[in-house]
Each structure stands twice: as C-alpha cells, then as structure tokens.
Length: 251
Image (tube, rainbow, N blue to C red; front, side, top):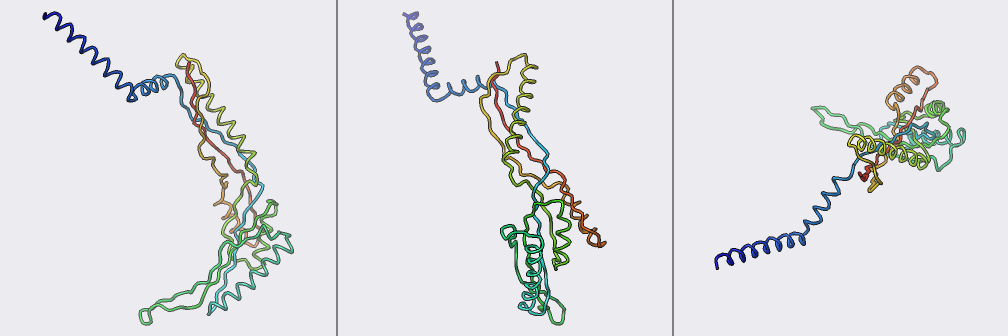
C-alpha cells in the first residue's frame, strides 16, 4: 500500500512538472529559448562607408546693414543698398531670381545707458541678408568682391554642398555593405564557422555632406578683403557617409 502511494505521488509530481513546463511554454518561454538559440548562430556587425566628393554648388550668405536716427531712415538706407546689391547679382552676374532668397530682415533700436538718464534709444539698425545659390565655384571670390563693392557689409559664411546627392548615397551604401561583409567574414573565420545569408539590415541616418575647412575658408576671405586683394575661396572636398547594421547567419 505504501509502495503504491509513493508511486502515485511520484506520478502526480511528474505530471505536475510536465504540466508546469507546458504552462510556461504557453506563456512564451518557448519563443525566448528559440531566440537565444538563434542568437548563438548569428553575427551582428556595423559596416561603414564613406566617399570624398568635390562640391558643385555653394550657398552664400550676404547681407547689408545700415544705421540711422530713426527706424524709417535706417530701413530706407538699407533698401537702397540692397537694391544696388540685387542689381549687381542679377544684371552683372546673371543670377536668376530663384537662386536669391531673403534669409532675414529686421530693424532694431540701439540702446545707450548712463546712470543719470538710464537706458535710452540711440538710433536704429536695419539688417537684410540673403542667401545666394551659385554654381561656378571658381568665381565665388570674385562674386563676393563684387557684392562688397556694391554695398554688402556682412558676409557671414559660404557653404559648399552637392546638388544631387542620391547618386552618391548608392555608392556609400555599397561600401558600407562590403565593409560589414568583411568584418563578419573575419569573425566567422576566427570562430571556425562559416558565414551564411544576411538576415537583417538596417541603415543609420545618412550623414549630410559636411563643409570642409569652413573656418579656414572664412578667415582667408576676411584676410584677403582686408588687404584689398581678390578674395580666394577654396571649396575643398566634402564627405558623404553612412552605416549599416547587418545581421548574418552563422553556420
């Protein structure tokens, strides 16, 4: 009788364990075990691709500033300067309307402060800046000189870029994928395994082309203008890059 009870107890316990495992499986542990098994047979790498490109377009930030005792006078004086600048850009340099757009415009008071009188308005500043899109990069220095002669007294920066970047994005993606395959192959070989198919690929944000040597370029331009020489602007090279996160099967 005792032997039967023990046997029955053992059967009941075994059944409970079996039921418990089945219950846990239904709650999702089976998928977790499967994921762990998959993770032991994959390689995750990050491939990087980068190319250097000669820019083919420039964006010039050019502005005029005027001071006067009244806001109206400052604005009127600045409008005359801007008209002269636009005439030079459009008529002499043949820059189309679509390549000239206003970047900012405002009129603001100048303040002075004394202990006796406190804060008082002393004249007004009118500022109007435009962004000029220009494609003949060899003549940018001459264009800036002409703008300065026409009355532009604020040249903030020159930004170089690529007008059509899609063609280069394909190249950097191919380089990034080749880099990922090279890394994964080296890891598989070191582990005495074989590299299988690509399982997952995701791309990070493709970087925008960066301005090469912008600070040096601006200082060079300022130095040239100060010495009354022709302004020298060098476009340099831009870099386009991207990265891919790639998961390979490991055999």
